[in-house]
Length: 577
Image (cartoon, rainbow, N blue to C red; front, side, top):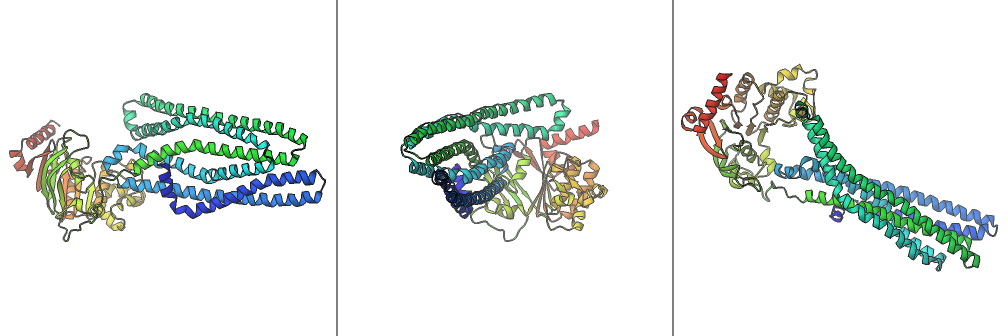
């Protein structure tokens, strides 16, 4: 999974990667040549007192060191650009893919997990890319080059490499093997902390209203303590890494000095060569250490990559057909033919054998008890979900045969929970029509009965709106959402209980203003109040996901017991009030 993710999103940066490898090769070869030059200075310059040789070789060392520094800086610069670009592209890919998923698929992962996968998981893979181009590329060059140069200095002393390198790699590998399962378990715990925190921030009013702060604090503490325990366990293992590395470095240095000193005393090895050999040994061990540290990052990045690929491999249930059909003459007629909708794994369908026709210039109302399937029915029309049986037709074409973007461009939806984005009143309204002028915005606000409170704001159309519209009331959010939908100038407009937060007087004015504006559009209204729909041209009554009545108000009162019961209950409530 990790290799697939790296291969896919690093493909545009192949030239940059080639430059990085060339720079790292050049810089590492320069660093490998420096100990040999230093040894020559000691043996041929210091030992013989040849100052000229020392100055010439010293100047060469400075030039090579400068080249090494330049290559290292350039490699890190290119590496950072590649890693940041990789992270940007991967986050964009995830974001656009999630935007194509249906509500059901988004709910399968959950918002907290999607946020973690887009941020922390991408960051872990991105950090692996950065460390790979700065460390992992260097390690094999340095280790192989160091071994070759060490063998050139002294073959007898090089037998120590067969002991030092496996000892360091084995000790670090033992620590890493214990860290891998803990890394894999850490990401879901991070998801859990994100989930609890997001729920508490979103539901802060409910928490305070029910005085549940202590219980919620305890719930967060439990999730946080679980994550902390995993992080501490990993931290304790990581704390063993550096002492282990330093121990092996020091033991190896002592071994080289001990056996090398004897060879110097025997005349089999020069002091400069011993110094160079010691430097090469430390470079080899440093390369092993870098590889080991990368081995720590790879398991966590691999676990994150699996989560990202799982998300990217999720095929959207709502996809454009290979050859979309565009209706020759858009009529605005909406028709449901024996529609059934069943959630995955559900024992019974939410909708069953639902058939109806909604025509332009008429208001089609849908009413029923909670859970009757009213909102689900509306979601099928703009193809936010596909029916499991039957078909939904618009303009004489099955909506599954049309491009989803083209289909939704003809439909405006006012959802049950009006959601506003952070920005201004104008930016939220132009979500429905980016090209709308200020005059068109005010006209839509006037129809939606929202111009009065917008004019009362100091900045008016430029008034700030908080995320979710939390700085305006529920009724104001609904009216702004209605104005946003009107700016779309739709052929079909769907109101999903969009008048629930309005008082009866405001709703009456709103319905009177909407009538001429939507005279040529197909209007479908989901409502709970009889007063909101009693004048509709067609009222569809749902009960248990089935159509149990269809007609005008007076007809249904006489012929549909379910509708008559709703009317009676609301009449009695009004009388009691």
